[in-house]
Image 1 (cartoon, rainbow, N blue to C red):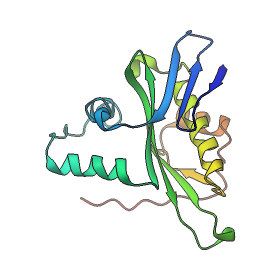
Image 2 (image 1 turned 180 degrees about the vertical axis):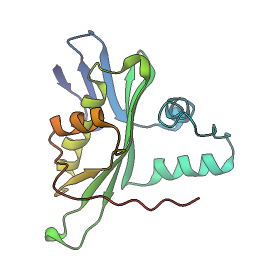
Image 3 (image 1 turned 120 degrees about the vertical axis):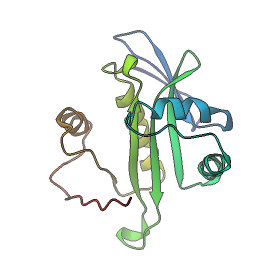
Length: 168
């Protein structure tokens, strides 16, 4: 891939396989509808969220919170890939924060073309710039292909052991 570095919040990357130019950036106010459409592919069995005040308030929290960002990959002015990065302040490890990645998704029509890899690599570099001492993510236990994908990006599945407690 050819990297063209733009301002700190924006990257333009050309995928050599497909020739598609992917713009990586943080979300903007008018991205909500496209993000909600993309998230339908993340958890297909979830009920679609109504665009109400609760959703708008959550969206505004994302826009205003300097420690949580949604990064998107955009092609032809359409959001095709995304992930969330939360940077957590920390009073250990020399007071260096750590990052948590969640909701990694690429639209099914654009999978296996390197777009999730581009966004995750961008988030890794962004986390380093924010002085994080590590970044972590959880992946569904049965998603072997995702585990291989994350390992190829440098994540170590044997370093920590994850636990999840879900609520109704």
